[in-house]
Length: 558
Image (cartoon, rainbow, N blue to C red; front, side, top):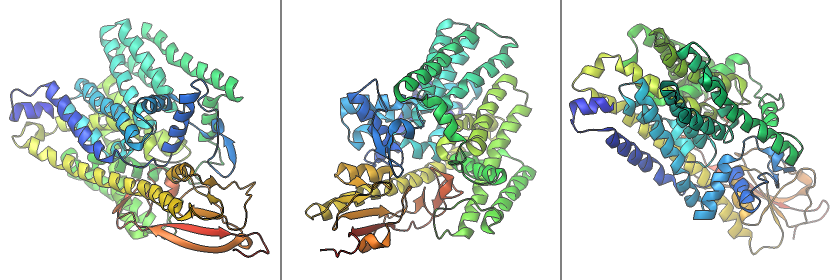
């Protein structure tokens, strides 16, 4: 797209202008969310960073009630600690507030968007289009409003690919060394980064048709993984790399859905998370291809709306017709993403097409069929590659040579940006509601007799513990008459209090004032257990919280 701007708008447009434009756009999109409450698994990374700040060589050496019993953090976490080390640096330097953390994690987001532009220069005449499609994709923008490891991992991934490709072109050891160190860092940020140890050699073999000296540099990330496995086994009695691999396929944790259902849900998440590709569909496909993709999406939507395929839904009253309509659109979008892979490879671009295709397909197959659940975080790694494929496809259209191309192409991007920002606001409203209710319960109970307990986790747990409340432990729930328990309805790892211990109860609700949801109304952005959509639109209902006053059996509450 930068070339189109240069050709039709200004002869003075340079790469520097593109970097500045992308940087400002990234800041403009993310700075409004810098006060967002810690949310979902953000809390695990914040607690780990606190531990690192005090015990830097024992990142998981603390205990936590994350499910229903007190458990070592080393048994809970399924991510390596590098992003938490970065968070600890942010905390020590700038403080532990939400704003300090969000501002600190702007750097990986900027590195990812700018890195996508730099990488796309190799593959397309429109690198600005690829970078903008990455920035305005809901899968990226919502993820970047949190402080988990995913965006940081992908930033390291993209730059590792950049340096590896430079090494293949130049043969310079420095480029391979830089790439291999970045691969190791990527892998120790999130285990999925280890996929680069397979992806980049596959590209190199296709490009050079032989093994080169580059193969030796791959031992650096392999050594990093082996060292991490041995280090954590010495610290915690089991290697955490192998522990995470077992968890991903454990029948106890894997969604109990058929492969067909998981594949369709994966397509739904793919189409929604890479939304710009769906919005550009009129420019990408001929009439026959559009009809076939739309019909496939419509059949999938009908299957969900008619309950022919029934993934697990956490929401007790899902609106199935509306879910089916949205599901149809997102599945069609997922089909179009995979269609870009096929169309690009059929053009005979060999190693470049193979790299982008394997990047997208490998990530999709893992997220849809191999991971313990379908979620947007697992699909995030393919968004830059899908955006580059989008730009390459647009390069081939007649639109690329028309006078009005720049204005026409801005419309789908602007629409995607508005949709992604509205979803991010909805997710932020959900996150902030947990913080607001924790603060409310603290104010209501701070001068009352009795202890305050809570169930539920995610950000609500973080703030309840911050205010001095204690999590309920299923196996040793000790309490006195007059104690209180607060339980959010929209949460994990909760269980009912036996009726004989309930002296009084009431339900309090908070209205998030949102019209887009990531974990309600059939949406399961962070886990498809909540629904088959990555996000959904509609009036988001209030978040209910059960407020219970306890009594010992046979005794009355005071």
